[in-house]
Length: 423
Image 1 (spheres, one colour):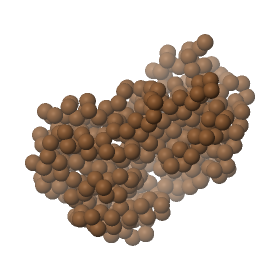
Image 2 (cartoon, rainbow, N blue to C red):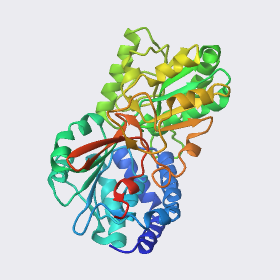
Image 3 (spheres, rainbow, N blue to C red):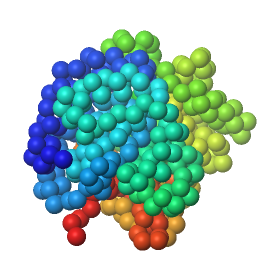
């Protein structure tokens, strides 16, 4: 493996190559994911910023020892809802000295082949790409003695099923999973700012991100005003051809997600909620959809939606919204808008700054919380210098220590979790 300064030079070269291939990256994202031109261009710009931050981590990385020794690799399983930003995950594992074997989602074939063509002249065989099925890849990675660690993005349902094999083969298993993120609006919030942020974060990638806000809680004093402003902004979202730079939101990629959205809407209406906007799903096109008077037991309040559907409910007191926000099996991210009680809600919901051992899965706390700030600001440096990850079934680490498998939860850096301090 090359020394760290040379690896950083390779990443600088990658930044240049990605910028030169901006149009190709956008085209691949359109083909595989139907992300809009606008979203894909934003993602290319974002990854440029993220990769530029790695040299600032050089002093942290320099003394660390990669988990993958000579002849070994770290296995990385990537999600289908991403294109350019996935470079950050790959590079973060490589920069601490690991060889990496990368598995893109099957529907990301154009992205994977393009990425491989850009990487090979820069990284050679140090970063390899695998085109087997996801099922075969994870099975082989769990059994292969030359893969000491696996990093997986995906479904918590699938990840939980690997615990027995992780224990048996003593692998370090780092999982990044779904979210069901609460968006809390207190009575003294700036409603214009809050609704603008909700509309942007909710409809970006047609809601197909694990950090999209899904459970919207608004204090009753401002509920009607908030709903009016949010509906106005939701109606203005421009749908259309993802390849048109003017299009703001495209289709939902996954048929499984569409089936889930339909089930959630049907359940919500049956339980007394009202669809105030949207709901008319045609094929893969799910328009901005706003569901009012949602209650906690509804599917749309419990299961990840992964689409442009917002479930809104009112609350009266701070203690109530804290209880409601905690009542979910996912704990990835939360957003708070408000002044006087904002800090109280924050302190009640936030977890520890970095992942840590826990006796069992921790529910009711969150890895990242933003307070009165836009997504773009709260996500600066994510996966590079800002730890990302959550609690509950939103993410965890199984780490072998002797004959014990330690469970860790909370925000993490993939670079640090695929390396160790020297002996």
